[in-house]
Length: 107
Image (tube, rainbow, N blue to C red; front, top):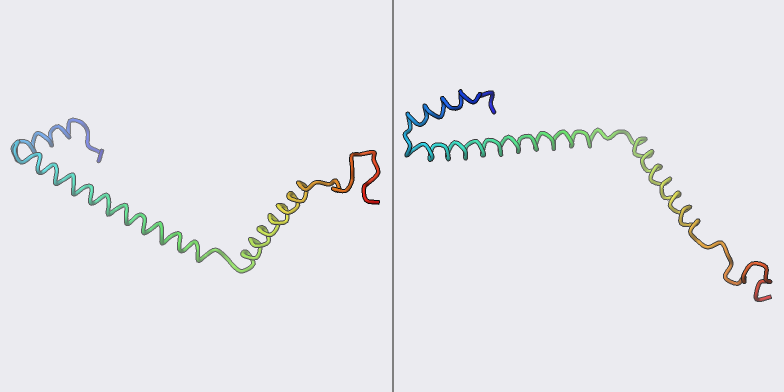
C-alpha cells in the first residue's frame, strides 16, 4: 500500500494521534478517505475518457473501402452457408410419393 511498511504506518498513526488528538482523528480520517475516494473516481473517469478517445481513433482507422468490401463479402458467405444448411434440413421426399417400393400416387 503506497510502499509503506507496517512499522512506518504505525509510526504515522501514532504521530497523527499525538498531533490531532483522539477527538479529531476520526473526523480527519473520514475526510481523508472521502478525498481519496474522490481522487480515485476522477482518475477512473480520466482513464475511461482516454480509452474512449483511443477507441474512437481505432474506429476512424478501420481501413479503406476494400477492407469494408471484404467484410461484407465474408458476411455474404455466411449467409450462403446458412441458406445451404437450411436447404439440407428440407425433406428430400415428394409428398405425393408413397413409401419406397410403391408406385407414386396421382398418375
